[in-house]
Image (cartoon, rainbow over all chains, first blue to last red; front, side, top):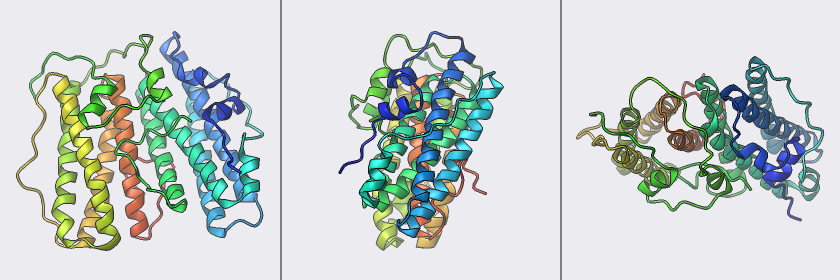
Length: 179
Length: 185
């Protein structure tokens, strides 16, 4: 069983009305545009936090995989926290946390290889979203935060790809995969 | 670098400079429309100067990888052989972008510090990759061209991946900080 959650699925689960909502430029004021971008990223980070928490809680998984999920869950939570703070500074009200992540249950049921593939897709979506955000954000501080998080998601990808027996850094330009 | 007429450097041109084919990714397509918001007015060094500073660092990385090859072995050698063309691709892309801006790309220096042992290379490589990350973080807030910003993020993330692989070789935490700043705690 291939557990597959597209970027569109993830974004839909995050309450974003289709991937285009995150990707399409908006004719809003700069701060408003930055807020919109942050909102999409917060939802992605919260979905990732939830996904790693579910992996961490799944009984019977290899201890190293559980440790990795715990470590990554804490880092995704930190990302979400920083983004929420920035979002609030722009006058935004943080969204409700997601209660499910599309495709995750199937991956959990299918076992470790499917879980790792699912996590790789999750991280690829995140890197692609940050890559897009770097082109669209206006605020210099937000640009830095986004790039710092993007780098960390890239490191998660390295660990996961190694676990899947893949090339850890296949490309000179890590742009993720929007799915 | 002498200031020169500036024009937008497209992602397509940037990647072409690195010898890469632009994939028709939805992200890329989404980013190519005419409705891309205009870059805000910024003050600071011209984009070409920022890019040339990054180019100098990439040349240093290329020289370090090339120069250390004779003393490397096993997994470290395989890793260095894999990463060297990536650093060369970064340098090529930056040089191309500078050229596209109508300025003259930096040239590699004649000499770089020798690395006599594998351990010296690993220590130097991690330090250098971190320095590049810190520099890219600073640089991407200074360039006015939005496509260049995103590409700097793509390079930064690849460099963060390099550090993660070296950390694995050194049996260290591969993702020690939630925010990759180039200044590891």
